[in-house]
Image 1: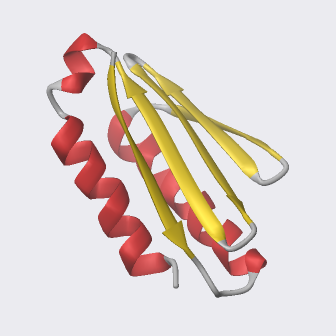
Image 2 (image 1 turned 90 degrees about the vertical axis):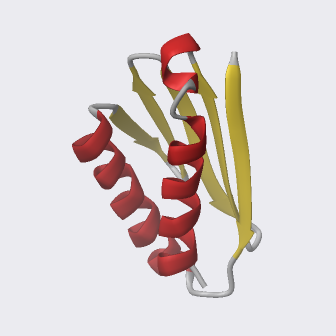
Length: 91
């Protein structure tokens, strides 16, 4: 199973990081048809061929994604989409 992991340090207030994480989850839902579920400071993302998790604590946001066979063909695009969003919204 293919996938990727992205981490990014942050210095902004945790509430703003949560807002950015919620925005990313909403964008992924809209554009990729996945579903997200929040528990504390962790969101899980699930969809056809996609299983992901995003957490933020101790100054670090971490995204890990596992992709099924068909979804793995879009791994570079998915990775870039997540990285760009984090670069634009998390400081």
